[in-house]
Image (tube, rainbow, N blue to C red; front, side, top):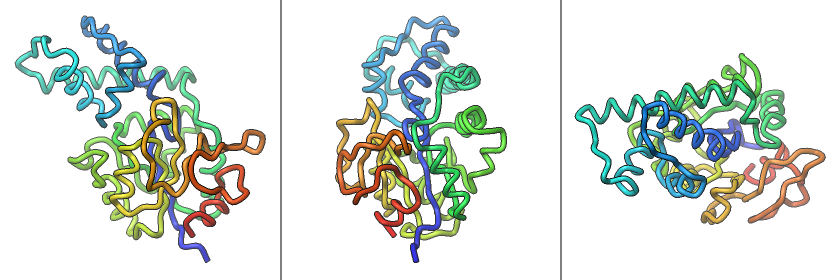
Length: 252
């Protein structure tokens, strides 16, 4: 009998390709609205993704790429305001259907629920972003599919620290060996593996060259019946899409 009782998902880049055409665009809209001449290109944003958390990313950008910017006295409030505006623009993009789920995500979520496997979220993005993504891509009730949503500043140390996974595991009263994590980045797998979670990785354009040595398997996506995944690292043992049977085969 498989010991897998729960699946724990990252959000940005894992559930949906939100970074390049979602968060990056929303950041730029927030900067323009604030009268700033900042423009985060696709290439620059790829470098900024080395830092997890939107507010942290703004600070990193100023430290490394825009040090001449005169920071206002209420700098913390300034950063928080930019980030809040970004969230508003991001939600609008979602509501307009600009950011779909990645292949296989909805299929796997529905199958897991049908088989009684518990679901959770472990992410550095804000709870508002998580709710918006689930609502606009699945349904208004989709937030309730997830027993625990560990998001934003609920823990002080963000990925690659393991704190968010510890938070979710404790809230679900589960041991690491009873869960499987889904990630897309080096910071993500450093976090999940430090929490001793078996991890399935689906890469994206920003993370395809990351080191995923400790992953259970690395794929280009979760796969659909008419669109099988490509195995980049590991052994799928004849499977062509990630379903509950494959997960149990990998880690059960």
